[in-house]
Length: 116
Image 1: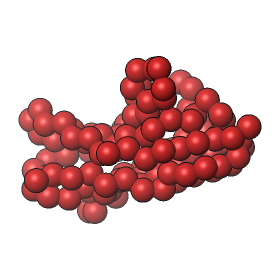
Image 2: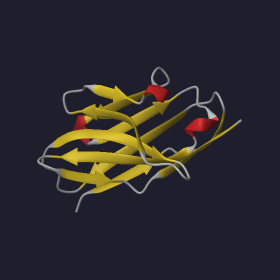
Image 3: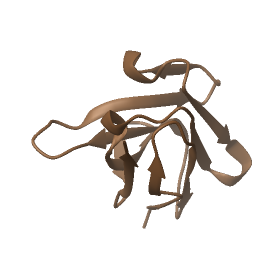
Image 4: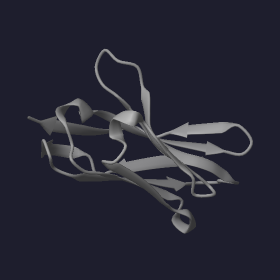
């Protein structure tokens, strides 16, 4: 059974930094992408950042220049370094993994709260 375990969320003041991590375990054939989504109350879940098996990255416009996604392929782990955090970044952050051919897995979510 595939599991995604997130860590690193918490409470931080505006302008501060946090680093999220997500470790995948279980029977995983070929990872296509790993990434982060977020959802705040009353809003739809949205893409934050994603990284492909080849190392290509994609970011939401709202986080470009502030967040950096990276991946440790050997450990099936993805990280999200979040700098210059804003109150608007407050949300439940979910780890996402897409595995060949069409399997999609989600973590339980980790809360990020940015105070003004």
